[in-house]
Amino acid sequence: LAKTTQPISMDSYEGQEVNITCSHNNIATNDYITWYQQFPSQGPRFIIQGYKTKVTNEVASLFIPADRKSSTLSLPRVSLSDTAVYYCLVGAFYSGGYQKVTFGTGTKLQVIP
Amino acid sequence: DAGVTQSPTHLIKTRGQQVTLRCSPISGHKSVSWYQQVLGQGPQFIFQYYEKEERGRGNFPDRFSARQFPNYSSELNVNALLLGDSALYLCASSLVVGGGYTEAFFGQGTRLTVV
Image (tube, rainbow over all chains, first blue to last red; front, side, top):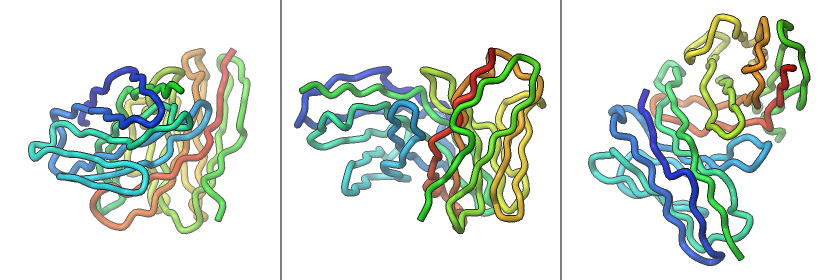
């Protein structure tokens, strides 16, 4: 299983853009990269997923370089409600429904007023 | 539509006891996965079931077992509880549509405390 490494914590002021980088040096060819957000005592919530290059949705962007050994989650103009733990996840569901995923240690983002 | 539901929400057990946790996936989702999240750490994969068959198993002892029912709900059983089994147990369901990682929807979890 691919191992992921993220910063333990980050602080940001409200309204700023936040970039969280995840390293996954031994990512497999079939692995996707997914980011989840988790609030205390709640289950993780899907933010964004990608395989290569750049993916953007209504809440975030995901940048993946050509070698796919790292990825960067970008949160535009964070608010206090974005204070949470963000997990980088690599893995894949294969055609037979087989799952092979690894959660990282998570990055605790603290948004400051 | 209801999301992933887990029961009970909280549970206190004594060392050596057995516990059963339950999960109902989102309607139409046939894949259910279980995770253990110890305080301050990321979720650790325990099991995945798809179409009632075990499709993946994490690095957990045989005290942990699971099954999936015809209606795709699932149970996680833990025997001979240890203090170290105290954690948030998360269930996730997914709509598997072929290769590639699909979005997993997580329940609120069951907080298990072993005393």
